Image 1 (tube, rainbow, N blue to C red):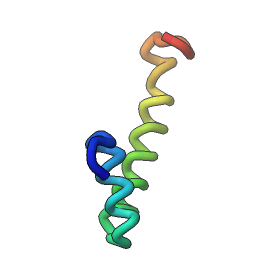
Image 2 (spheres, one colour):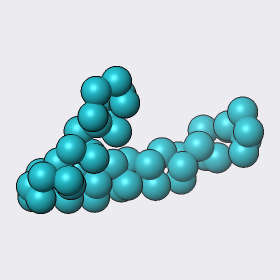
Image 3 (cartoon, one colour):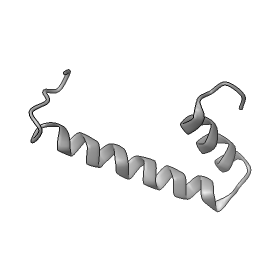
Image 4 (tube, rainbow, N blue to C red):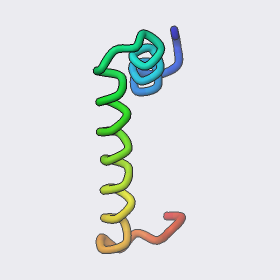
Length: 49
């Protein structure tokens, strides 16, 4: 898992180890992405920029 980046490394190593933290990290990362995408348009950002 070396050099994959902090987010991906934590996610994959946690899930691979079978740790609850890996699953929780996946849930919260997904939630953060969805919230960020929903906030994009009201803040005046288009689909690609």
